Length: 266
Image 1 (cartoon, helix red, strand yellow):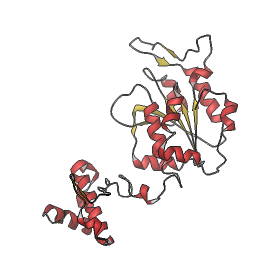
Image 2 (cartoon, one colour):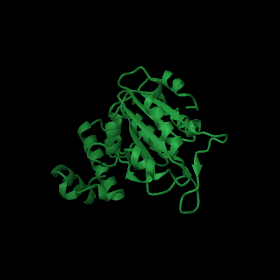
Image 3 (tube, helix red, strand yellow):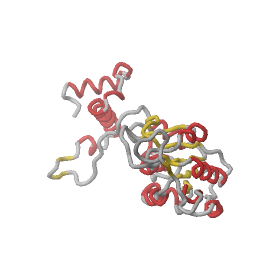
Image 4 (cartoon, helix red, strand yellow):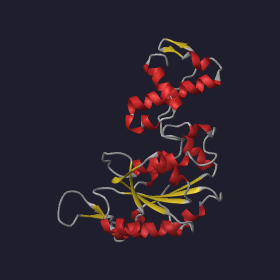
């Protein structure tokens, strides 16, 4: 993504009717482009499953210095991003494609990003991710132009670019055809019933750091499935107990946990 005119942006829209388009409004659009150029996201873009465009508010600022920020009313440290450059940038991004777009502001004050939210976003035709800098953006813009705010955690970053890159990655990998094996997404942590993923192993079988569990070498797919389910339950209880309501578990899951607790499930 580079600082280009709206016409150049339009010329690079993917031809795939079912591709998701993500526009990122940022003072550093190249950062998002570089983060999305490798791995699963890079392949999704190459296959036309994802169209990713960057929009720099400086390109829509006026004056000799193309200023995009100013001091906050009421005093205090830092700067606040100006309304007009952001309004013009959002208008240009919206106009570049006729599909309706959900505008999301990446903010530590937003709702937590979850896998369920990622699945919801992955079904949309378009997203516009707004990345703040400094002390944030003028509140009036959020009230009039933004559909929702999302946070990737209870901490503060220098800007919204890293958070936007997380959304792009998480959404892109759920596009049909993005992963080599469709089951990869199904088995991920937080998918399905919301449990964490089970442990995984590969060659060699024997190593100074330990041996691969025998059950995974048995060829007994039913036992392997039981082991993986048990490990997923145990790992979630140990690391994220708030994700598991033991009282709501089925009989089979409760038996697996009971076996583990009795020392029989390893």
